[in-house]
Length: 235
Image 1: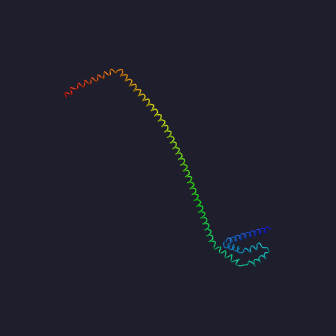
Image 2: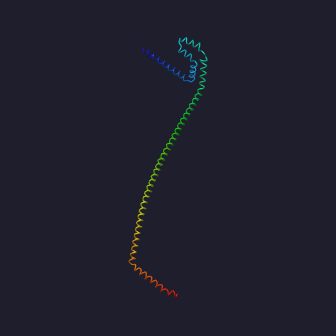
Image 3: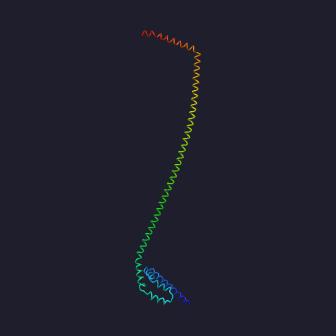
């Protein structure tokens, strides 16, 4: 009994290995581009009998007879799939190159588009930065101009205040000078009047003496002239 089980297990193992090897062989064959291309072409040209065999009603014998009578064409079974697969295999490298060219062209266009977007963004950022710089410059100039205007207005106000102060001081000093001149004139006038009064008083008081002195001076002058006369005659 155990020998039978062992033999059964060996048979199962052998069958599994054989099925696995067969699957690998089939997969390797289908990985071959020629077989794959031919299989696809054959299915494309013979899809009607395949669909009829799978989905039509009837037994297998009926299906085979219908396919043999209606779809047994050597061109569809062999020539068309073979020719199309050969054409496909011949065109595949060129199609790959064309595909690569389109991919490179697309990548290049995409790169150019991204580059243009980056350049446009840089230009926009530069324009925005310039606009912000000009705006800040205008604000600074406006502030400086406002400060300068305020400074000029302050100077004008100070000058106006100084002119008013100077005018007030000038008026005050002119008034003080005028008062001083009036006072000085009055004092001089008083002095003149006082001097004249005193002179008149002295004249009244010492008039006789002054008259006598004047007479004496006159007599002395006459005597001096008479004394000098002989000397002039002798000369």
